[in-house]
Each structure stands twice: as C-alpha cells, then as structure tokens.
Length: 318
Image 1 (cartoon, rainbow, N blue to C red):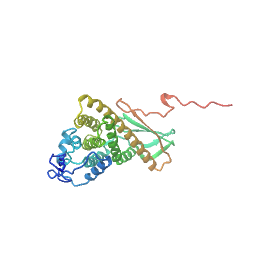
Image 2: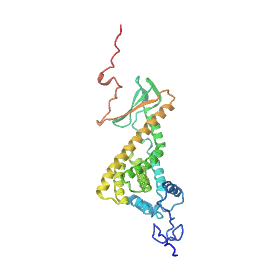
Image 3: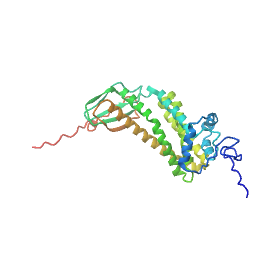
C-alpha cells in the first residue's frame, strides 16, 4: 500500500514533512475549516513576536489587493497577520486624532452654552460659521457651567475614546457587505480584506489629520476609496466592469454607515457631557445645518419664530 504524497506548502511550494514547512516555517493550516477557528488562530498570531512588518509595508502601501490575495492563496508566512496590522494601524490612527487636539475647536466661541425657553442652543464649530448643529433639551432657560468651546472639546474627547469600538464594528460590517456582492467567496477572505482596508484608512488618517486637520478628511476619503477599488480588482481577480459596480455599492454603503455611526457617537457624547454638568435635562434632538454662504451665519431662531412669525395665541374662551 503506497503512502499518500505529501501536500505542498501553500507559501513556498516545498513538500510538507510536518505541521510546519521546513523551508519557510509557515504552519500548515486548513483554510476550509470553521470560520471561528480561523478567527481565533488569527487573533492568536496577532500577539506573537513578528519580524515581517518590513516585508508587509511595500504591498500594503504600493500594491493594492496583494496582501488579501496572498492570504487567500495561503501565502501567510512572509507577511504580517492582518489582525496585527489592524492593531498597529488602530493605535497609529487614534494617536493622530489625539495629536490633532484643539485644532478642531479653535474657532468655537467661548460664549456660555445656553439654552433658550424652547430648550434650543446653537453651536458654531467653523471659523466662518458655516457649519452648525442645534441641540434641544427637555428643559429651557438654562446655562450649562461650561463654554461652547469647552463643551465641544469634551464631546470630541468622548468621540475619540469611543472611536476604536466604532472602527472595530465597521470591520465585520464591511466583510458582510463584501459577502453580499461576492457571495461565492469565503467570508474569512472578506474579513481579511476588511481588516487591511480599515488598517489603511486608520494609518492614513493618523498621518494626515495632525498635519492637515479637517482638510485631511476629503483627502483620506478619496485616496482610500481609489485604493480599495484597485485592491478589489486584484484581490478577487475581477474584470473592470465587475469591479466598478461592486466598488460603487461598497463605497456608498461604507460611507453611509460611517456617517451614521459618527452621528450616533456625536449624539451619545453630547448627551454624556450634558448629563455630567449635573443638569436635569437630557438631549431630545440633534440637528445639523450647513450654510455655503461665507461670513458669519445668523443664528437660527427657535421653532415658531421663523421669519418673524410668532406662535398663535390660544383662542379666548368666554
């Protein structure tokens, strides 16, 4: 009875003689095993000593889609684990946010954070007063014991603190979106693509935000999405047309999900700051307003006072 032929190493092609390849050292792992087994193995690898980062940065930065393509093909020994790469980028991204610091609030006025009788307060957060959001609380005629700038700084600090959770949530959501448009591929491969995609987003944001402040946001969005489109074609070996329609759907859905998550964190952070002041009020509404006109924007009157129209007086009953 003849012995079965040894399986080749997926990374270098040399015949395997044990659990680890004698040539390159990669562990023989069955990629067709259960999803959670693969995830547990990847998380474990993320915290092991790793000297492969320098061999990972070139394809990560200059070869869109090469890292997820290698991982899907089983060539993992020569590159850093996607989970390790994501943890590194997560750290870099939020260090960049912390370094941005007061640059986001330097134009916010030092006026008291006051609510009128209808429970409304406006906050201008742009130097030209072009971007505002309107807060509504359950109680009116109150002044919070902090200025508008201090209020905004506290809100942003809480948003940064909750940022890692938000980005970590986006990774599996984007992987599921990839599964919808590429339903014949393995979910594990989509998860790897999502980890690398968000690693690039975090790393680029961490490098550009301290230098360019708010100007970095559109730059990061354009660069990351162009790179993601090129990576999609290479990683999954798609035609131009197949890449184009999938990229449009993924970019639209990803941007919408990020904005929704950002607004949610902003609202939650504003509630937490208001509650910390000791006020009995709670946040009832959060409205954004953007004015393209340059110069100072006129404060928006509370409902019922627009255009000088006063609320109707109750009918007199004899």
